[in-house]
Structures are given as C-alpha cells and as structure tokens.
Length: 556
Image 1: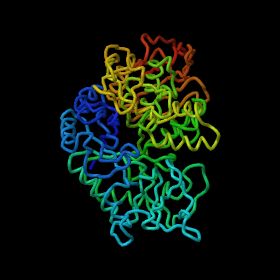
Image 2: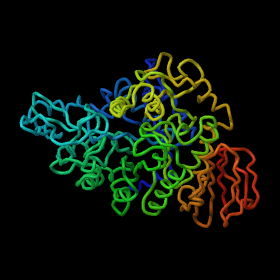
Image 3: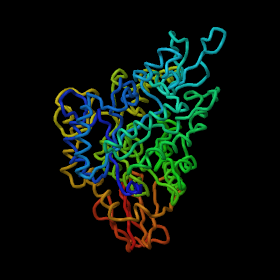
Image 4: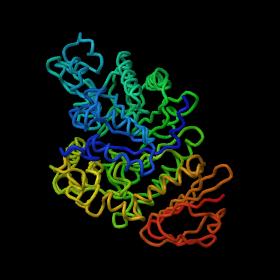
C-alpha cells in the first residue's frame, strides 16, 4: 500500500476526557466529539488521533487498558465510536487510534488469568519472576519504574513478582511470547477492519526486554531502562507487525519513543522496509528542562533550535518528521517557551517556528486557541499518578509543600489535561455540570468562541498556517538550512524545493528586534505568505521585528 498521504496531512489529537462533555456527566466523551467534528475540520486538519478511549480503571487515564477491542462506556461505547468514525470519514477526516501494547491494565482478563497460577496459559503473557535473597523477598532485579517506585510488584498468593516499568497497575506484556504478538496483531486487525486509518504506538520501542532481565545502571528513576529502551528483539517484532498486518492496509503508524535520537529514529523509519512511518521524539521538548519536564531549567532557545535542526537535517530524504509542540504528556507550550503576557504573539510564533518545518503537524486540543498552564492552589486538586510519584521523589530531596506545588504547577502534564475552553459560560462550555477536573480560571478570556470572533486570533492563525502548508509544497517537502544558530533571540531557517525558496523568521523576544537577513535573501523580493502581525514591512536586508513576530517569505 502507498500510504504516503500521511506526509501531507495534519493531525488533531483528542484527549477525550477533557475535550467536550456531550451527555452532561462532567466527563468528555464521543458525543462531544460528534458535536465538534465540524469545528475540528474547520481548523484545516485531516485526521484525528484519539488518546486511549478503551475500557480502563484509569490508573494512568486510559493508558492502562482492560479491553483492547471495546470503547469505554463513559465515552459512549463502541457503537458511538463507529458513528464518530463514519462521520469523520464523511468529512474527509481520518481516524488514528492509540495502540498501547507495552503493558495492559492489571484488570485486563489476561492478567487476571495470569495470576491464577504458574500453569495458567496466560501466566507467560507477563514477566513473572521469583524474588532474590535468602527468603526471596527482594525484587528480581534493581529496576525502577518511570512512574511509581520499584518496577516489581509482589503477589503473595503466587510468591512471585510481576514487572511494570510504568505504574503498578500497568504490568508489562511479555512480547517474547509468540501468543502475545498474535494478540497484538488481532487487535490491530480488529480496528483496521472497522475502518480506522492507523495507530500512534505508545512507548513502542520498550516492548522487548533483555534476556535474563539483568540489573540496570542505578538512576533516580527508570533504573534498567538501558535493557528495554531498544531491546534485542524490538526490530524483529515491529517488522512482524508491519509485514503481517500494517502493510496489508492503507494506514500509517507513528511510534512514540522516549529518550531516542535521530539515529534511533532512522533505524525504525528509514530504508526500504521501515517498521514505522514516523517517530515521536522528545529532544525539542527539553529546551527548558533536563531529561524530564519535572526538572525545570530556564528556557534555552539555542537548545530548542539545535534539536529542531538536528531532526530536520538528519531525517531529510531518509525518513519523515512528526512535528509537535504540545500533547497530553507536556505542559502548555506558551507557558513554557512563549510568554503568557504576549499569548497571541508568542503562541502564533511558536506555531510557525514548528510547523513551517518539513514533517506532519500534530496539534493538541486547546493548543489552537492558546490555552495556558493551570495554577492549582492545593496538591489535592491534582489527579495524575506521575505528579504524586514526583512528589515522593522531591520530598526525599527536601523539596515539599509550597515549593513542590510551584514545581507541579509549572511542570505537570496535567496542565494539558484541563477541560477545553469552548466559551465564557459556566464550566467554559465544556459541560453543564462540574467537570471531572478543574477548568482553568482564565476561560472567560481564552475560549473558542472569543477566538472565532477575532480575525487575528491564534485559532485563525492556525487556519492560515495549515492553508499555507497545503498550498505550498515547499513547506512540506523542502530541505532545511538554519541561519544564525548562535542567536539567543532569532530562529531563522530557509527551505528549498524545485527552484523555490522560503525564509522563516521567528523572534523569541518581547522587544522590537532589528533583524538582518542572510546574505542571499532580499526581503523586498520575497512575498510574505504568513505573518502574525499586519503590515510586515521590510527593506532589502533589514526589518524591525515586533515582539514574538513570525514571518514566512516565499521566493518563486
């Protein structure tokens, strides 16, 4: 199948629980998605990616799945999903599902069966091991989970431990078992046969663990990750999924791969027999932190540019980039890399900086209206397992109380999970009753209704941006060359394709900045095809950029 259509589309990510409540119970659902399909289409996107909406006990808000072949009743059930799928397709929108097969919920039937005994046929669906030490009371190895303390959980009735590299209620599947791989292929076929157009595959590079599960290098979190980040059989298993299922359908797959670089990406996505079509990397999301969002540092533009440029240059002509600056796992980008006092200006500039590159844009719900981080006044108002695990880690370091609350408010991924702000009515038009999670108090100013009314809004800029991409193949397929890499104020790069050139200029300061163009560009001869201000005047070699101004010049 030629599935290269994914290169020219843009994707809108829905974290359903916080998108829109359509049945009045305070929880976002598929009824709400049905209501808003025309709005989603109006943004200019071509596909919807649903974060998990399967049945789940919600220990990790849906990434702990208890049934892979159904839709949670609180979201509307399978029949409502089929209606969403049909209505989306009628509007020319493809639908992408989240595939989470590194682990299941501990309430999945497979795991319930595996706990019944060592002779149960499902026991080997997971990693069960005896403990170490004289009494067998020590975990099988020193691995730590990324979410919740040690990576092993003891089950007294079996006198064995099971492995979970995420939360305790997310036991890892043993992909070395051929029966497990057949289950994964069956799941894929189930949704593809229904008409789903592809998958975003969660932490997919973690699915193979090193034989013997040896001790790992001691780290504050995720000790042992070097033994499963890119395990010994991961390529073999992904090729099996690709050849046996994916290649038989007109669909695409994008893999999430934490702590991966461009070399890793090319291993999975390049060549004549790629295992994935794209990879979601994290390098560019570390410009204001160290390794993880939780260890905050001052924003560093050069670090951001270096990451963007590395992925653009290393992948060009060999693979394909997934472009994003927000999703369900990161705080809001304006609050991180932009300026809340210049919300419209910095929000639109950041969009141009990212989405004028080569790759497929992924836009997260609320991003297109410039939603900001929330600021909760008490830790009890948070919901996420990661927030509370981080609290324990910081407490050991002497950081607690208000100090940790300040960190959580700045760095928690829950900032991306507040209800979408639709209008200025009570509960931001998300629901008619109190929502499952608090609405950001700024909803009366920041909401879809207000953005629709303002022709210069962030929302309308996103519409213009996606239109510019569709109308100019150079933005999708052109090569990439960065200018002024050492600048702490300007991000500037050029694109070249089939005799055309484009120059992208983005200012990262709240002051007016005198920009001197690269030697090979005359600013008066370029047509400004995108700008977040009116009247972008230029002299041949210089222009005055206003706070957080973004311009795209096209030379034909």
